[in-house]
Amino acid sequence: MSAKPRITILYCTQCNWLLRAGWMAQELLSTFADTLGEVALIPGTGGNFEIRIDGELVWERKRDGGFPGPKELKQRIRDVIEPERDLGHVDRS
Image (cartoon, rainbow, N blue to C red; front, side):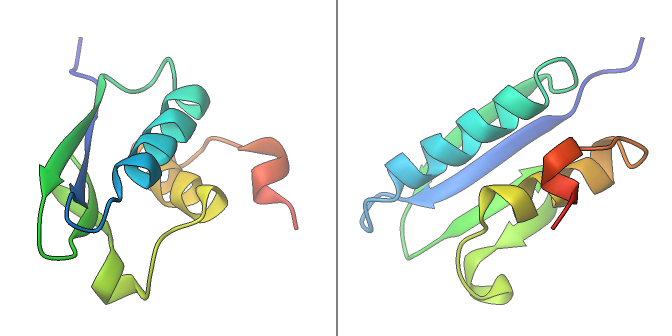
């Protein structure tokens, strides 16, 4: 049995992004409840907001031009951990 993916969300405490990080974690846990092993929130500083899967950078606020919306984040996560999965209404315009 292989280990389930671990997602980390690094957020800036100075910028008060805990609620945003918690919301993203909740969205991912709701959508991928049976697929994920863990979603961890990591406090940081310096305007950081990064989302990683098993250490692989999936979203970085500065690089990607802001914060992800739930739809885009779920699609990016799905593309890494379950590319064949249909996300239903999230995949439709």
